[in-house]
Length: 228
Image (tube, rainbow, N blue to C red):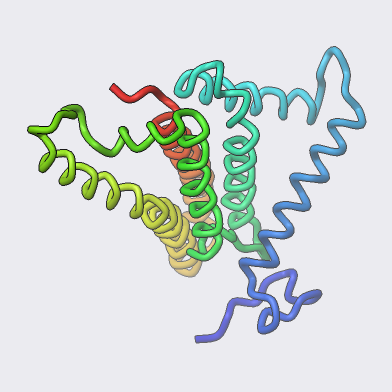
């Protein structure tokens, strides 16, 4: 099966650097460029790009504070916001002719999910110390419930280990499905159906970025909250 010819193939050999790596770097470059542009032209009354970015950032901050709380929100917000913006840009990139969505490759999603997995336990240990492992023991903790506690520890451990897999595969599956639908319908009806499907693709891209971000937020919230 031949690789699809994309715009950046003119500059980068896809056999040397895979498409998902090239377009991931492009998405990162776009985000850095926009952030520097906004920073260099900050105004008390925001307009244009600054107004749009402030709206997005405030919405993300509200999501993080509502689920994690004010104390930890400021610490975890940079990580969550970076992931959210990167995934959104990558998702929307796949809607542009000649471009591809890096998140349609499971390697990109794994590269996002594994740091989230590590950050979850890092901040959990930072917040609770060794007491963080109480999260894995279930609600009943006494000598008579030791077998149940051991079982809960195994179940919780497996649940945490599969989180990077589920995060990666969920986003990968949805983005690949969107790409295939656009390709098939674009071949059947080049002008009529793809217009409606592009609108649906935009919605799917936004929803999948939100779902990934929400799950990351909930995982981190569960790690730093007090065990009950």
